[in-house]
Amino acid sequence: SVFRKQFIVKESQQQHGLRHGDFQRYRGYCSRRLRRLRKTLNFKMGNRHKFTGKKVTEEILSDNRYLLLILMDAERAWSYAMQLKQEANTEPRKRFHLLSRLRKAVKHAEELERLCESNRVDAKTKLEAQAYMAYLTGMLRFEHQEWKAAMEAFNKCKTIYEKLANAFTEEQAVLYNQRVEEISPNIRYCAYNIGDQSAMNELMQMRLRSGGTEGLLAEKLEALITQTRAKQAATMSEVEWRGRTVPVKIDKVRIFLLGLADNEAAIAQAENEETKERLFESLLSECRDAIQAVREDLKPDQKQREHSLENDSGKVSNIQYLHSYLTYIKLSTAIKRNESMAKSLQKALLQQQRSEEDGKRAPRPQDLIRLYDIILQNLVELTQLPGLEEDKNFQKEIGLKTLVYKAYRCFFIAQSYVLVKKWSEALVLYERVLKYAHEVQSGAGAYMNSLKELPDVQDLITQVNAEKYSLQAAAILALTRHVFNLCFYTGLFQPLSERFETFCLDPSLVSKQVSLVHFPPGFQPIPCKPLFFDLALNHVAFPPLEDKVEQKAKSGLTGYIKGIFGFKS
Image 1 (cartoon, rainbow, N blue to C red):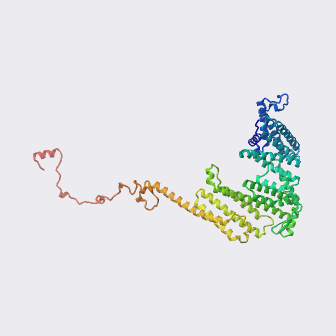
Image 2 (image 1 turned 90 degrees about the vertical axis):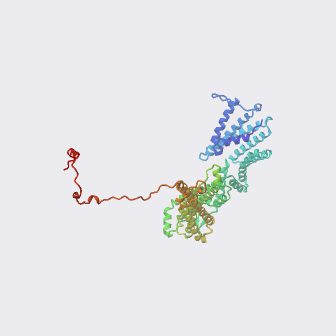
Image 3 (image 1 turned 180 degrees about the horizontal axis):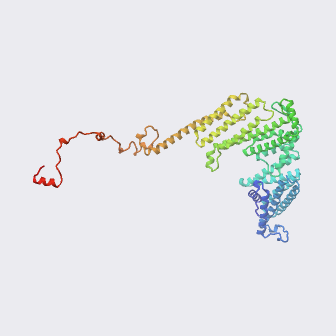
């Protein structure tokens, strides 16, 4: 029977909740799969009215699904134990139930290992069953804090997985090597508790490489680090900052200050952005806890602090100064975290075109503007810390840092205007960037050491100058394109002779259908002979002419008859 236990378990865990640490979901999956297997194999434990226990024996191992039954039983008990482990942080009594479920998982693993000793099971499955049994045993001993027994069980499990990884191809060995990496921190933790002090450094390195430990070891390692620092904190009594020494009496603050250098070193050595972000969040969380502890001591000491302010002419008390120091650490760490995020976004902006081709959402300059807004807000809070209002060097240093981040903020605002082709606004903002950068360079002087960790403004000046030339060229091209479009649409109705005053690249001028003039020419108005109107005629009195004109003959019938017969009057 070939039974690939390790592949079945890992695939089931990844697909049903453990990728996100949801042990309750995985436990439900194991229960449902057990029900389906028992129904398929007709291996039911009685009916709904009566329970009838059945055991898997070697005689029925012709079907490897019987081994899968026991494996799912063990996985269900283990996942329930891990679920209780998470809940035991707030409900300590659930730890007893946790140990009970782990013992149940070990019992099922022992039964699986015993059945796999049968001749019907291949050698690989036997080794996997032994490793699985050793792993669950180690976890049970680990919870009981039986470090030596747990270490022996984990070492046995690790040895088996290493041999299996060497015996198969690289593709098959990947899963076994992953299990070895998961087990190694548990082994080193057990070694440290047995007495191997060098294991502490190895655990810290594993913490950095893996981006955080998982399972039972996670909070154990954090507790170990805190315990180690607590031992060192007993010798720490004061801290010096900006020329003033203040006593440190709060244990939580001592532990935080002792681990500050280690945390900063771990952040600097982080291999990827995800690990660095997690370490930043951890450091900020510890800092907030330390500030809260100091704030609780500040409340009962309010009257005494006010009296101290009056006597010392404005000098703050030691506890208030310590609070300002911790707040400075918190704000400085937040600035470094946001700056680290901004750098990663800037790198992504350089690969924007490739990201768009891959179908992913590319970062935009607006994403960076928000980060620099938060940084500038943190710098404003730094200038308002009690006890540092009269520190001219500190205020000058913060002022220079503010100018640096304002320059970068203006730069990315200009970039966002460039994207929407608002050339004039972008050009004004680029000039503002150069103004801020030159102010930083002129005022740096003795503060160069404090500005080393900040982005280099000279690189920004070089980049802005290049962007300005590119911006001017883009603006000219856009204007030329606009004029060409205007010429194109108006040129359909205007020949060349009517637009001599407007320059544009008209490709129709070199074509066979060039429009130079209107032909045939259109009708034009011309002058004609004027009309004469005699306006005085109606007002002229003519002389009488009766004596010069003969009288007219009488008309009518009598005159007609007289005329016929020749009678004249």
